[in-house]
Amino acid sequence: MLPPRLSPSMMCADLFRMGETIHVFEANNIPYLHIDVMDGLFVPNLMLGTGTVRQIRGGSSIPLDIHLMIEEPGEKLEWFDPGPGEYISVHVESTRHLQRVLAKIRSLGAKPMAALNPASPLSMLEDVLSDIDAVLVMTVNPGYAGQRLVPQTLDKIKRLRAMLDDKGFENVEIEVDGNVSIENALKMRASGANIFVAGSSLLFKNGNIEDHIKLFNEKIR
Image (cartoon, rainbow, N blue to C red; front, side, top):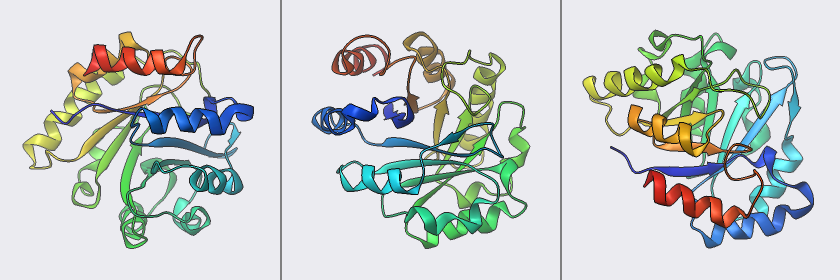
């Protein structure tokens, strides 16, 4: 299995302590910062605009993991100035030309990731597997933090890992996003996930962020 890694959900971070929080992540070798971008159309919420993305990138040495929950993302990729080492995920449900958008992400120097809502079938990925470096499996319906896990998604992760391995894409990563508590992360890991978007259910719940990172490393690694 690919090694487990954390991608903290920055929409859950305390805005007034953002710099301090990023320094904690840098000191603990966190590999990605998860950036949720919402347009109020694809999902019923607004979140993290282009200015905020630029500020977080400029104030951190950690690559971004930008999750575009927006309509027609291919027309807006340049707004976020994606760079080398960064992941950019686009939803299969958000564009009629998924392969074209994934190819554009790679041409801009970033790593393309395809995202699936809980009810979207794995078959929507079959013809773009060679175009992606990772798949983001939404384990809640996107738009808000603090939701309950959709239980069917655990089997979906397992079936996705089997599909990727069977087709020769063992190095394609699986990211999970939604109610990633320690309890659920253990189940997700057992199903084959290796990147965990950690928000209000793990890193940003009550307590010290470093303690939560330590707990994740002890339980999941």
